[in-house]
Image (tube, rainbow over all chains, first blue to last red; front, side, top):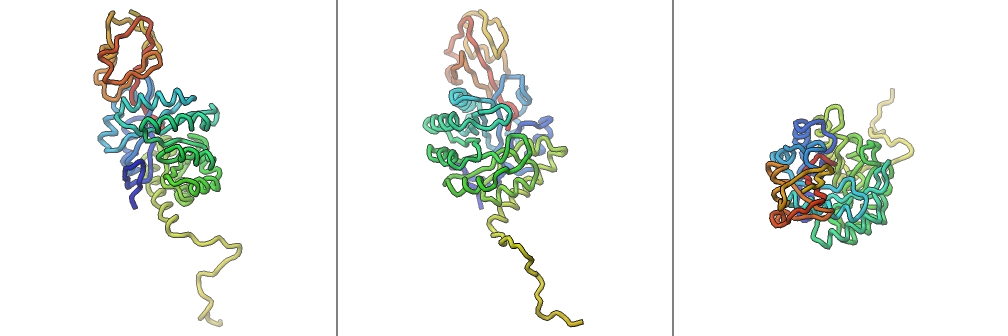
Length: 256
Length: 66
């Protein structure tokens, strides 16, 4: 079933970040292998950060993906809303992955500044996809101010620790009417599958692919993991039992 | 006049506009955004926006990021 996000329809439920790739060649191969249709990028001083020396936008054009600029590195609502407006001017899109960082070691979001920035950008016509913590109340507040999705962290950015509090991710899914996209903390394919099994509508990941020993193989794994998790969530898993339940019937068992 | 562009000192001709500066820095302005003294200057306003001595200019572009 197609995935509706911000008024657009996607086939893939995997959003790929471009940060951390060793070079643009590997990045392009990974994007293609992942099947993603929506890719994040950052805004940095010309000629400084990786990718900012040219070629990144051309690569993303070739892949035919939609751009999702982020506000990575911003610490206040004022700063993040400015970066969002700069990104809109640079990339001709009003979509933004809104990040407002509140803690340097964990890179967890500052909920107060995040909500303030989200409100302002929604009022300014942006399609706001906020990177948030796994707090169900904050997620609901973000949805209430008009965010097009909420994107809770499974665990800190780049940590690869997976989903620290699956219960909260489920609560977030139950508490909002907008898409829930698990963003940050994914380490390997099973983490992405679990996110989907918990009811998430999509998964956003970067480091798990770009910093894997073989990014292209991991991108392929993530593509299948998201699909498998989605299918499993819809299929309705069996209940967990304390004791065994034989799958082979006892009837007709020979007496020997 | 002397500007600070992306954190470094830079001399530009008196009367230069944001559009002139961007043209000097990047060959193709696609995917570029500019802030002057912390305020966004939209692309459509680059030619008309004259730079002044001491301005702090950020010239930004696409970079890899999660």
